[in-house]
Length: 420
Ligand SMILES: Nc1ncnc2c1ncn2[C@@H]1O[C@H](COP(=O)(O)OP(=O)(O)OP(=O)(O)O)[C@@H](O)[C@H]1O
Ligand SMILES: [Mg+2]
Image (tube, rainbow, N blue to C red):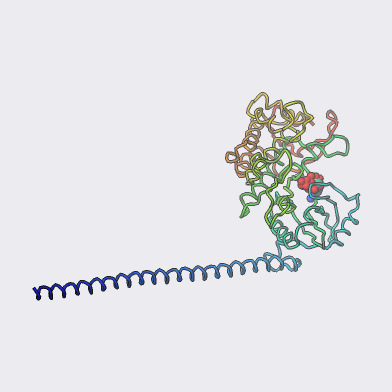
C-alpha cells in the first residue's frame, strides 16, 4: 500500500512535471509565433518603406527631367540641335508682337472669340501670322502655360493649324499661329452673300473640308498618345488656307483657358452651345466621342447651311440636331433639308452616305458613335478631287460668290454639274 502510495505519489509527480513541460512548450510555441509575426511585420514595413522611397525618388527624377526638358526647350528656343528643341514653339516678347500687329491696331483685328481677340501680324522674318491674345489664360501660371503650349506645339499634321509660338511676357499670354487667308468655315457657311463677303462653298469643297477636318480629329484621337480631346470642335475652329484646305484650330485650348481648382481642370462643361455632346453636358464626362458628336454637328451644318441653334427658326427647327436626326434616314425629307445653294451638285447616293455618317456621329449613345478613322474611311470615296485647287467664281443668278473646283474632269455623279 505504502509502495502503492509511493508509486502513486511518484506517478502523480511525473504527470505534474509532464504538464509543466507541455505548458512550457506551448508558451515557447506562442512566443515563437509572436516573434515570427513581429519579424514578418517588420520586414513588410521595411520593404514598403524602401519601395515608397524608391518610388518617390523615381517620380521626382522623372518630374525633374521633364521640367528640365520643357524649360530647356523654352529658354533656348532657337537652338535646333535636339528633337525637343526643334519641335518646341518659338518664344516671342510682347514687344515683338506689338511691333508685328502695329500695337494691336484695330485695322489688324481679324476676329474675337471666347478666349480673346485675333490679330493679323507680320513677324520679324516677314511671315504673316494670326496672333491670339488670350484673356482667360493670363490667370494661369507661367510654367503651366508653357508646358501646355509646348505639348500643343508638338502636334504636327497637315490637318491641324500650325502653332508658330507663344508669348508669356509678364501677364500677357498670346499664341502665334499660321495665318489662314480664307478664314473660318463658319464665315463661308453663313456669309451674307454680298459682294466682298466670304464666298459660299460648293458640294465638292464641303466634302473636302469634311474629310480634312475628320483627318484632323483622327490625328488627335488616334495618332497621338495619349489622345487629345479637342473639346471645342465647331465650324469657326475649322480654318481654310489659300486653296480651301481645311485645318482644325484651337485643339486643347479649352483646357488651357479653363478654370483650375487645385491643379485639376474643373468639371464645368467647356465647349460651345449646340456642339456639346449630351452626355458631356449632363455629366461633365469627356471622351473622344464627345468630339465625334461635335463633328457630326459640323457635318450637318455643311449639309444644311444651318447654324446649330437658332430659336428664331420655326417651331421644332431651333436645334439643328433634333430637327435633322429623324430626316437623315428619310430619303424624301433628306433632299428637302439640304442647303438650297447645293441643288444639282450632288448624287443622291452621296447625300445618303454623308447623312448616314452624320446620323451616326450625333446619336445620343456615345459608345455607338464611330471612331474618326471610320468617318475618314467613309468620306474618302466622296472626295473625288482631293488635290484640285479651288477658285472663286461669281454667280449671276444667285447674286453671290461660290467656290468651285478648277477641274474640267470633275465628276459629281449628280443630276447636273455645278450650276455656276
Ligand atoms: N490662324 C488664323 N488665320 C486666320 N484667321 C483666323 C485664325 N485664327 C482665327 N482666325 C479668325 O478669327 C476669328 C476668331 O477666332 P477665335 O478662335 O478667337 O474665335 P472662335 O473660333 O469664333 O471661338 P473660340 O474662341 O471658341 O475658338 C475666327 O472666326 C477666324 O475668322
Ligand atoms: Mg477658334
